[in-house]
Length: 163
Image (tube, rainbow, N blue to C red; front, side, top):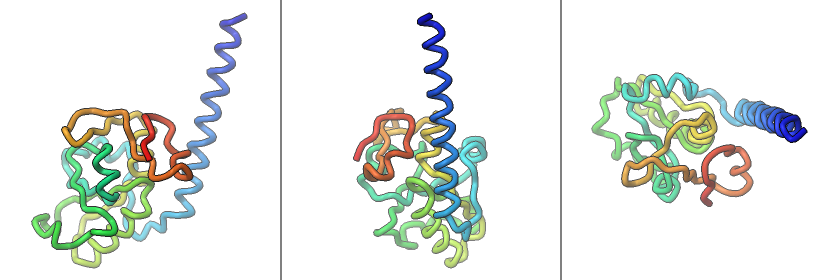
């Protein structure tokens, strides 16, 4: 009997996570305008070492965790001067919490003449929800993820939320 209850609870939990994932996708489709070409997490994971990763979150978010080899560029403090060393033809992927801020930074990059810019769809929330690794400031794997705030943190299914 316990085994049946455990199986049923596992099934309900899987269905709840699946429903939340679909809701997150609906939210993203409403917020992300696709003014910058998107790249899905699975594709980014396959190309991670071949792209320049730019983190468009604020420094306090980046310091909690970020994608390995990512470079912090910020959102409020973003400056084209901070990326002048990146060739205009380099493959660049910008990410933030869900993809809205990174889309705006991507728009600025494209307007400045960068020709191979993509926005990570679902950004670091989707990255962590799919079970991918993030690192801390010492480049060590961590389970911590800055969830922006409690309202947006509901979209983080895995890891330890930090606000």
